[in-house]
Amino acid sequence: MIERTGAGPLRRLVLLRHAKSDWPEGVEDHDRPLAPRGLRDAPAAGRALAEAGGLPDLAVCSTAVRARRTWELAAAEWGTPPPARYDRRLYAAGVPDLLEVVREVPPGVETLLLVGHNPGLEDLALRLAGDGMDDTLERLREKFPTSALAVLAWRGTGWPALAPGTALLTAFTVPRGRKGDQRK
Image 1 (tube, rainbow, N blue to C red):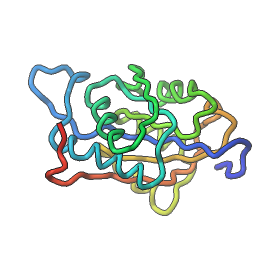
Image 2: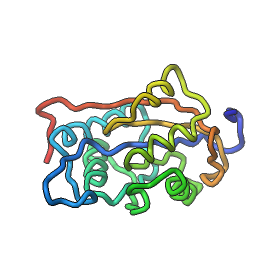
Image 3: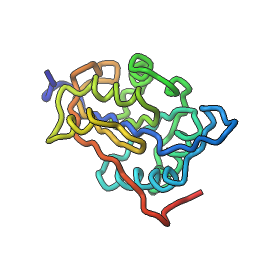
Image 4: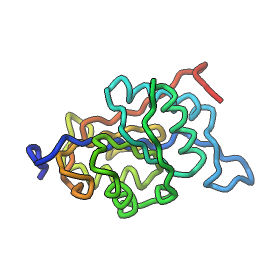
């Protein structure tokens, strides 16, 4: 059951799966760069967040090259990006590790952005969402592709209180850039 009238401010957790990555021969997984499509889609994700009024107070990003580059390109679409922390725990993280990172966020942060990987981000969204608006939950269950953005909202006094089934999936989108939007 989603607590729609809980104590505390409305908080939002935004999950951004890194943009499409490349698979260069001889490059370790952690060091894989973005593919040309990823270089187009990451800025589109930043624009989508800005247009939806979903800019975070804090971003926590995986240390993987493809996640860091996704964050840099998305944040470049905003006038003043929020502070960012890079946390190796987000690389190849499952739900317990992701929740640990989220629960360490200072209470003054009302909108948190995690930039990471699948299947962890998809699993986290599905675990936290007790419900979804419109068909968002059904679409999320179908696929959480690269550059996908999921926005979960809940009321709480602090991030440690975020628990399975307590959030509402308010948005799920997959921003795509256009040819010619590619940035290096």
